[in-house]
Length: 178
Image (cartoon, rainbow, N blue to C red; front, side, top):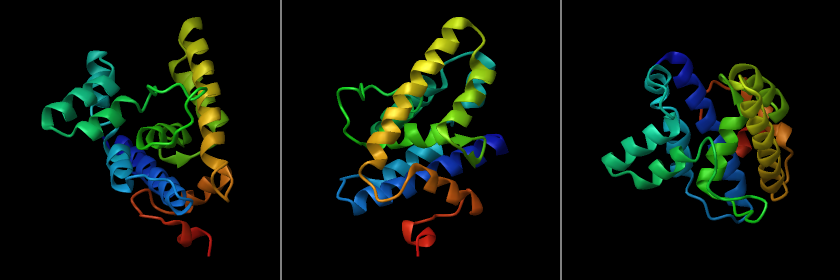
């Protein structure tokens, strides 16, 4: 796997673990290890998919199903688009956290949703239909962000503080807010 995908995946896992740790402290029932695994592995088939044109979320899903890691398979399948409609179901689960964490990481830097989606429009908005899909996804992820952070005593910009740490560092809430 290329280094830039490794760095991105490490940062996504770091963001996911950080958010999950805060959510657990506020009473949410989450498997932090599953969030970490999903963050680390969500783009495992990305390079192959670039070469084949295959959907990398689905190819990773199939890989982990074959290996018997069904929970991880389900998370990596949903890292681009969630199954749940967050307008009607605001339940926070591991797949939602990995999906959101991935949307906050541009390459290996944590950025705002607006910055990340500007980048996605430039890189992937090659047709009017794709641009519209990206804009709709931005609205959905903005709602996810609201649903996550309304449960926490920190703002969404607090995630940017993680940029001072290496992507591979395990950072807990107490490491930043002492």
